[in-house]
Length: 460
Image (cartoon, rainbow, N blue to C red; front, side, top):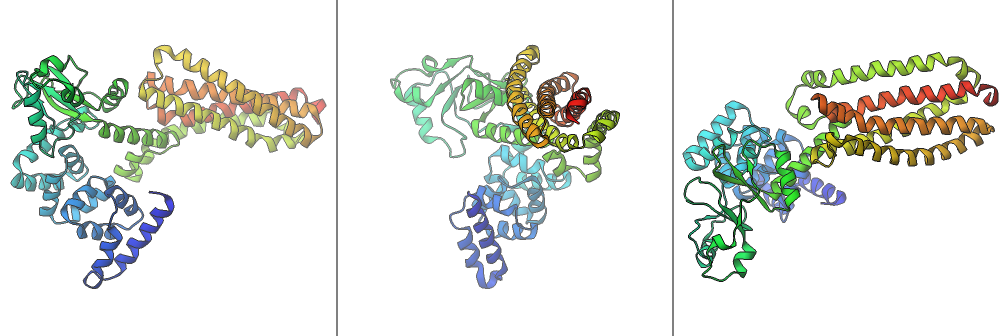
């Protein structure tokens, strides 16, 4: 949904909500007509919680269930705490069980237990499945998986399997892959996987064991969700089978769930890189968030004080050439951006596996080469500006040289700091930005003012 369309949808919803439901329920129907659940959820981020609840209550159960699976954590909690409990149970029953488990996990423990009890009265099997999913650690494959997949026995022929595909329930998550297990009615070891394409092209009397891929790629219920995303990306899978601790097939993870994971992880990493974390902001109190972020900021403060000491050491040079002070923020800002870019690339590479701690020198050398090219280009540009501004070529040389050194430092620190943090067990996204910026300020200002002092007779 484009920005203009989103604003139009938000305004239309607000106008419809201003009309009393007894008189203008049709206005809200017209405002919601044709909107996808994801678009409604996006628009609701700009509305007040009571307005969101009014829209949620107005929707029929089918659309409300779709919307519940798209809402942010805070709105999910508000809606589930204020909507009728019987209705929430019905909506959970309509959702895929992995999405239902996510909704329950975002509620308070007391409210979660109430919802599970209501769901157990309505659909005991679904409630049991949700409880099983919630028994796995958050962020693991067990939390992401669904048990709605199609499995057949090794004695099945292509014709028999095609019959099961046609009869498959609409709850089946995907029919792209079909799983071969000794006993499809119970949890049992995974023997192989065959694709629907191979099934369609095969002879009707062939056995599935002739078509299946033996020993397929799989993951464990305890595997981290990022590892799952890497496997699906590496092998271009549509779905990944999940095995329990005994090696039995208990579920699958589809590519759409992995996309959600990657988007969530990227957003959280980016926000942590600039000093914020979406999950912490959402789930923790302001005091808890401040406690988590303050140590890194205090560490940055100490390093920046070193930059202050460097500047104070060269005060006499700044007094003699006041124009130096005009270029210090420019050098700091451009170098800081170089470092943040490098840190963002490395943090994402560490998450996706494209950057390895065992081959750290490759990433460092590549980033230094790129930083050198950018540093030379920016150094020449800023040096030229400095020379024209001051009327002295030597002043431009000082400015250009300092810019180049500061950018190289920022590129190096932006690359190496996340790796060191990862090696020491810290969150690289939380430490990279603050420390990279602080170190490049110390070294950048130091080189800048040292060169200026060295050439003071020619630039003053």
